Length: 129
Ligand SMILES: NC(=O)c1ccc[n+]([C@@H]2O[C@H](COP(=O)([O-])OP(=O)(O)OC[C@H]3O[C@@H](n4cnc5c(N)ncnc54)[C@H](OP(=O)(O)O)[C@@H]3O)[C@@H](O)[C@H]2O)c1
Image (cartoon, rainbow, N blue to C red; front, side, top):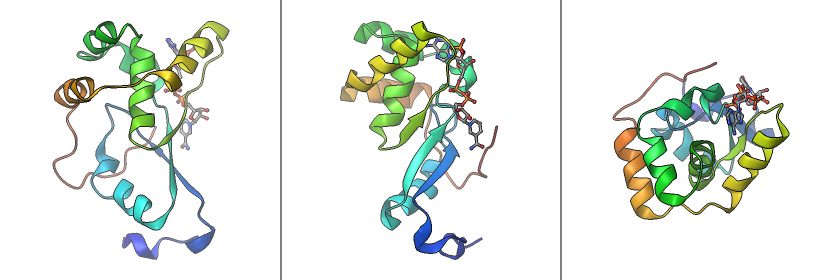
């Protein structure tokens, strides 16, 4: 499918896709296309429904920054220029997630995350949950 032929045309305000550290396929062509077209990207399941929090490589970055794995995972999505829609039924978790907005990820943290969660090396079918 040609991205330029997607239905919706000028009426498309945002593209909501599965996007988190463990699901980076959209970075290959969809995200650049959205950026070019002025379409906002909204990341659903930004912490992979909680599974990402146990992933290797996230904890070390979080500890180095004095943050939690959930905050780092969410701050990373925001640092990519995407909006994120985490879900939680726990006030404590929501407060924790809110902390991601104020968390700056320095270049060394971004590098460490790239090492642990590799960006795509080619076109990748859109993943869904
Ligand atoms: N467009 C689509 O096709 C699509 C598909 C899937 C989802 N979505 C939307 O995306 C939103 C979020 O997606 P999602 O619910 O699939 O995944 P998510 O936000 O990545 O993960 C939600 C899970 O993470 C847990 N959690 C949240 N904060 C946490 C924290 N600080 N520490 C530990 N666990 C934490 C929650 O449990 P607690 O409640 O215990 O905190 C919940 O089980 C939803 O509003 C959903 O409607 C859209």
